[in-house]
Every structure is written in C-alpha cells, then in structure tokens.
Image: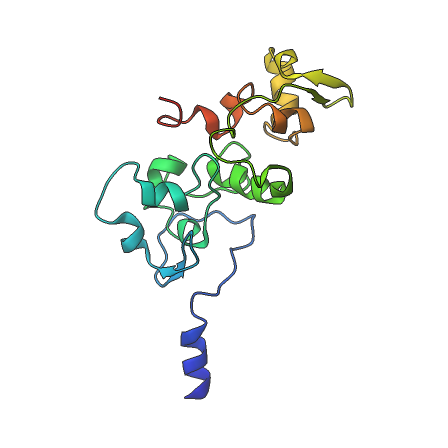
Length: 178
C-alpha cells in the first residue's frame, strides 16, 4: 500500500519524454502546468477551441516554452502544433523550437515578451563566425544558416535577431503581433 500512495503522490513528476519521440495523443493523468500545478488535458482545453491564454502559456507560444502539461496534450495544443502531434525532431515545429529554446534559455531568459520579437541593434556572430547586424539577414540562404532552420543550429546572430528570423521562429505566428 505504501508504494502505491507514493506513486500517486509523484504521479505528475514525470519528466518530459525523450526529445526524439513524437507524441500525437493526449495523455491521461496530471502534469505540471506553467505555474507547476498538476492539471489534466481537459483543464488545458477548458472547452474552448482555438488559441486561449491558458493554452498559450502551456502549448509553447511566443516566449512561453511548452510545459509538461502542454507536451502531454498534443491534441489539445493542435492550434499551436498544427498537426495534433509534437515532433521534437522537426526543428521548425513549436516542439522543436521550444525544446531548442529551453536548451538556449540562458541567452534569452530575463527578456520579457515585448522585446522577444525585436531585433537587437548590435552586430552578432553569424554562421561563419563574422559579426553582422540583423539587416544582414536578408537572403533565404543567410536566414536558413543563422535562424536555426532544418539541420542548422541557431547562431548568436539568429538569436539576437528574432524579428529578421520571424519565418523560422514563433514571432510570425498569428496573433503575436496584430
């Protein structure tokens, strides 16, 4: 009986799944939301379709990373992941970006959402190790190699120029800037 109570108590302490797995179904159980409270997918959906503030805070929107709850509710987060699946291997998906963003979090934490989609004003290191301003990122070739497209890792330049890189990150998502 003791073991059981213990499992119950730590029910929602599950870590995010290995980041190579694709997840396409809402999972049963309680998972931590954006303020670390255990909630289920029904709470996240809240009976509302489309984008909601609650979903935006858990499904990976703008500066918000995917929470454990959002990760475990890919169908509920369909308005964010477009397919009802989280595919961390797809660098252009919200999941791929959020997981990558959390790995690179140290460079952006502390910035609030109002500056999250604004280009920096300095010169930053590009994929060749050269310092360039954000407006240097004006061709697809340069954007893909600096904004974290496909197999390319995001560079310092790409991170500091989120608006220039908006086609490759969450800054171009509807509602973020209208």
